[in-house]
Image (cartoon, rainbow, N blue to C red; front, side, top):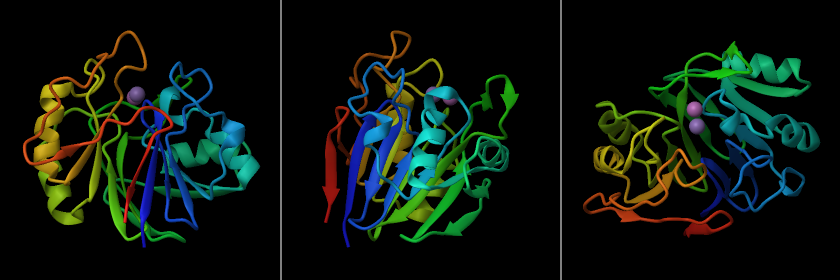
Length: 223
Ligand code: NI
Ligand code: MN
């Protein structure tokens, strides 16, 4: 069992155990730092943290072409269904579902969630168990104390933590988040994509945790 984590830029990832492929927040079209096209993505699952367009991105096109299952909040899952996506798994905070590769659980995230002006339920974080590893994507969020509880319960091997400031935590609070979650590897996300966001990961330096700064298209593998 192994997990390969490829960064798509911004908050997007491709996770694979070599058999199954889970994509999270595939924002590629219009993403100034993206190095992949939606047409190049092959997957069987797409999970979404929330409804903002820099996270939903190309989900409908990718899901439709791959006949992939979209895992998202009840409201987003319904919108996907209305958009022609055939396979949906609605989920919400605290819930966990079995998948072909393992499982996905949804956690709190403190943010907002809408798509083209329509309410899209609460924003979420995603915990995915794939390749025998556990990956916690915090979504877009501010710092909250229960990140320690999420770390304690799921014991993630890797945490993807927003550090771009303004809409989410910045590097300083992201550092606190990484330390609270306690995953041995932290990947900074949601920075550098736009002028409004922090342009470097400087200051993101959780103690006792390896920071893996990935450029779009770069991967890290956990054996
Ligand atoms: Ni957002
Ligand atoms: Mn965002």
